[in-house]
Image (cartoon, rainbow, N blue to C red; front, top):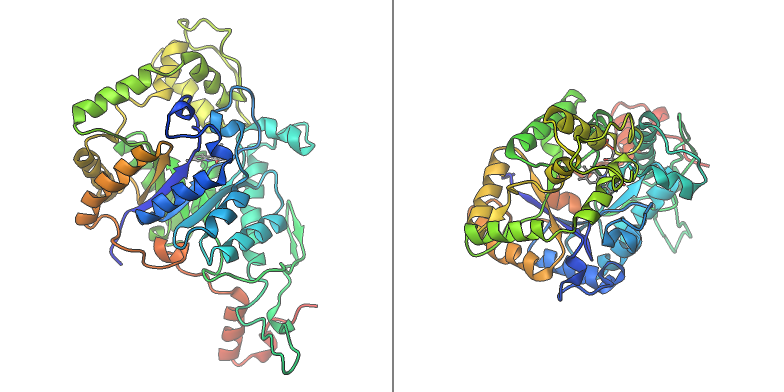
Length: 457
Ligand SMILES: Cc1cc2nc3c(=O)[nH]c(=O)nc-3n(C[C@H](O)[C@H](O)[C@H](O)COP(=O)(O)O)c2cc1C
């Protein structure tokens, strides 16, 4: 199959991290993040442009300083179920944490979305960076990294096991014999692990794509290992071509070392294209967006990786403060990177905030031709397999779909039509076969009928 760029649309309603002002834009209703029609319209816009997926980020701990979209938004699987019945081809990827969910419940809800959508569900597996979430789930403290990522891996494996509960022909639904289910095709999991005990079977069958596609987002060593182990798609950030290439190679090497085919791990960094008729105009637009930001709000959100630490009491022009291990159990990787860069470059607090909140110059700023050329360079240079485009203002997104994508289509970088109606089909990922069916076939081939899995009770 020809390698083509994959496309995701990140739907952020009234504006996500660092975007304090989109909600004021005349094209964005103030309640966009809780209006299902908004999501449906954006998903249809992305589907008309042949995007692979829409991606819904999520978290469950807020403060008054959280980004506008985070303050008041719909739960991902609920909203994606509504989007599913209003679209036909686009993938539907929701973020669900394994730190504050249990696998049976996750498997059931995701399998439901997969059936509702005809095989278009995806799961962004996250381990929750916001430590404050613990207090919403009857816990005094957030889990440490080892436990978070241990739960994440075990959760995914349990879900995948549960998604094999029924073989594809488990329901004869034969009215003449009165046989609704074939009990030999229904399987218990009987999982007993470090974090979970799950008996199964799951009470829902497989979708046309077999199982939801697994995505992963988390940048620590533990996060990358998890992605290499179970991620079929990886969501990340790539501030520069070189940083993107380094991350890409690292993930693909880790996946290969685990015996996986690296081509079946799709790396998709998030991007915010800034487009104008000319490169100069686009740079000017980028500058005005940066200068228009409210520094007090930026400073408040800068505290998030450090467990929403309040930086407002510090002298902005003094060296970056000594913070000890603040953030060690929340967004540790990000917190450590910020501290290290501030120290290495001898930055003040103000300079550190500016350094991390405005990539300057942003890589995907320019005329449509420039942005298309840059995307192609990063794609062919193996800094990415796909892009997650942040969507807020519809007409800005339309410039990307109507002016950048046609150039890439002409060059064969993006598709000219959907290959399939499932997310796996469009991402070029195989449908995982039901493990019990495979075992049954292998046992039959080996002539060992006794090895056929025993019927469930
Ligand atoms: C591109 C990207 C998207 C993410 N999206 C979410 C999200 O929607 N919800 C969430 O709780 N965490 C999200 N995360 C963060 C992970 O959950 C992770 O817990 C966090 O980054 C801290 O772990 P780490 O040190 O392994 O990165 C995202 C991370 C990346 C890189």
